[in-house]
Image 1 (tube, rainbow, N blue to C red):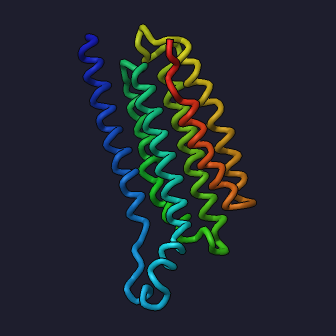
Image 2: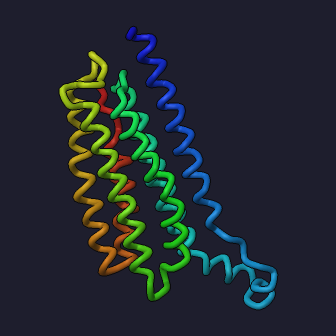
Image 3: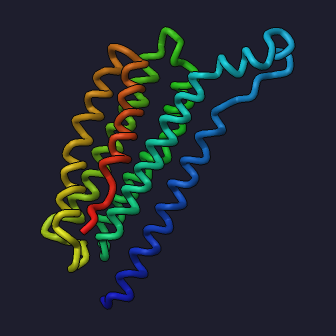
Length: 206
């Protein structure tokens, strides 16, 4: 297989992945429901819009998290030049979990203040925990022995991504554990983790 063919194959995989990320991140906003006219007449629009804060929180946290995932996914593909059968399915597993995010997001928005809010937070944080595992698995498969990496991939960048992968899973495990104690704390941890990986994920400049 020539370099041009390898690049074309990887490009198609990236384009497909970008489309899935775009759909998942777009579906999030559909979970913010406009108040009905009857409710507005009874309580006022401003009051009802303010009462939607769990929806805003869930939307913002999920949007930022998926955005950071997409950025890091794009980043690792600057180092990956080849793919194989197993890698395609591992990437598919990651995308499968990403497309699931709108569902726990809608549950969290609906039931955050409900007595069953912990169940919604369990599923929400558990989904991100599974995504963290899948992302790390995808990268480890590609990077092991430089199996799918470009010949010129810098060791510093490879090590940085591997370190972030090792860090992500235990941190999201902590968020999942926190969801059994406090829904708000677990969501706060997820938001902080998204910001953390956004800052730590900058490519190394040489």
